[in-house]
Amino acid sequence: MITTGDAAPDFTLIRDGGTEVTLSASWPLVLFFYPGDSTPTCTTEAQAFSATVAAFHAKGVKVMGVSRDTLAKHDRFVAKSGLTVPLLVDEDGSVCNAYGVWAEKTTFGKTYMGIVRTTFLIGRDGRILHRWEVARIKGHVDEVLAAVEAMG
Image (cartoon, rainbow, N blue to C red; front, side, top):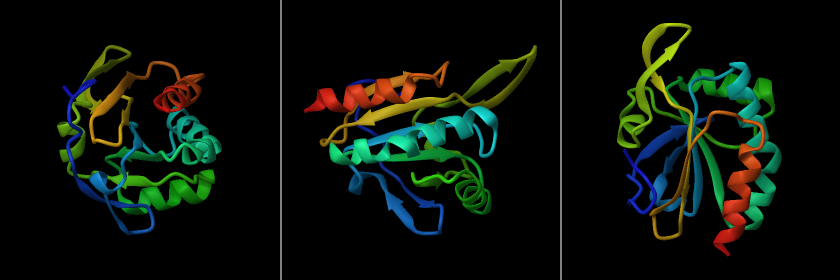
């Protein structure tokens, strides 16, 4: 599991719209992993990051989301939900595995593999400054922004 102080695993993925993004070219960065496009909680989270992205950018920090959905699903999700943060395509799950967010989950007694909603703040040096496993979306983006502001 990747945690505070660890080097962020580097990767290159396709984002919504079809262009490539390389993690190491994007530091500092808020990287949030979410289970799936167009679900109520994931939509709320992505819209909350989109609504505050200017505040992150003002601090020199980019914001990107990652799920295992396809490029086509990301493009529809961005258009339908009015998102302004890039969504990265990790269809094979290699980045989810590298960050330790692909794990066994249980919902209503059913056990399955899925993305554990997790947010990472990656510093200018490519190290993890903060790691949040997100149980509640309400207040989460504000907490991440406060950590960014504390970076200086």
